[in-house]
Image (cartoon, rainbow, N blue to C red; front, side, top):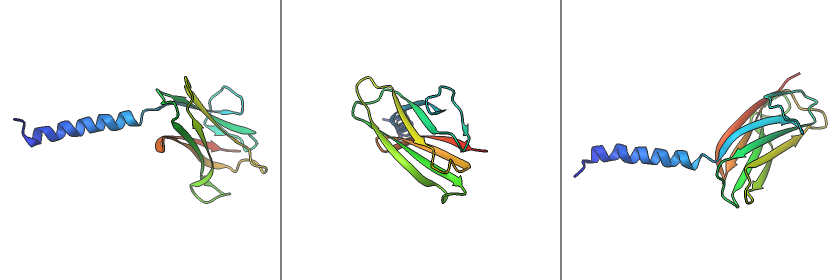
Length: 133
């Protein structure tokens, strides 16, 4: 018979593996300018549209992927201001989700931003970027 002291670490290890697998639906990400193909982490205030491409790893058909655009620190909004969100529902054979945000009328305020990616409501990845002059 196993002692409880030996069994407890085994259960902890199994739950840690299960938790990792549950948060493993988002792969590589790339921020680009509008229809561009060159990934970057810094953008100019006059960038017409910033697009985030998100690789999906073994997604379930019907799963919801949410992209939330956050102004982390700018002079134009309070800290951690949620600018916008969009949700993509996974279709058959879908291996990528795309989220885009167009330039505000007055241009992108300089500062730090991030896009939070959620899979079925669980935060799986945060993609930071900056807007600089």
